[in-house]
Length: 309
Image 1 (cartoon, rainbow, N blue to C red):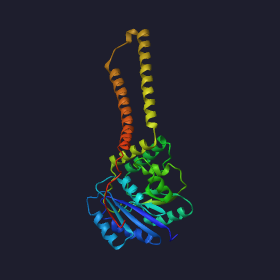
Image 2 (cartoon, one colour):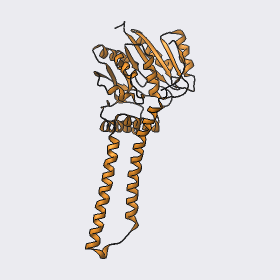
Image 3 (cartoon, rainbow, N blue to C red):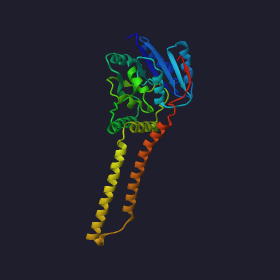
């Protein structure tokens, strides 16, 4: 479908060394279509925006959106979706861990009727055992807690039909976890499979705490089960306390000579109940925080400049 417009959205943050290698591999793939490539600079502190401007001055199909500051990867993706004009929109990171060459295969799946085409990882190179383990645990946990199945071993490298993008743009909630929002409606979905490579240059921008916050955001955005679990823990702690009380009463009546009052039992009980209470308060606080953010209704991002848009 050479007459179909393909939009490629590339969120970038301090990726100046990766722009040229990415374009060297991406442009030969998309040139067979009518295309545009939208770079979204998420408040980079290096020369990323300048490098993109240099290439966009030579090629009007290369476009740039720059934020005033770092608003986060998900907001950068959403800004690309809001500016995209393509019939199909592909999102890909600039670090070349995800191969642009499989975009052709994604387009074929889209042409066959899929509204969403996920790129699913068969193998992940250059990632530690800890990161692989935590990623697997995250997907199992969120699928256990969420009412919306989130595909396993997929990231933000995907193709969306314009219908799906329009649905995302019309949502009233903040797009903090696009993987869940994309999966929620149940549009026709297909997969392509690939081996994820090592990062081409630079360090990952998703450290442990960013990944942890991202996981919490995903769980809180698509499930109220943590609140139900907090209720269960409350009943559990109350039940254990009642059983312990019965045990002490029976023991004092039947075996008064062995009854000894000690501080260990009190300490354990206080720590257990205190932990349950703090966990419950924290879970409730997370949901209240999300309500607070939605009520504020602040813009998702602020654009400093646009090039070729």
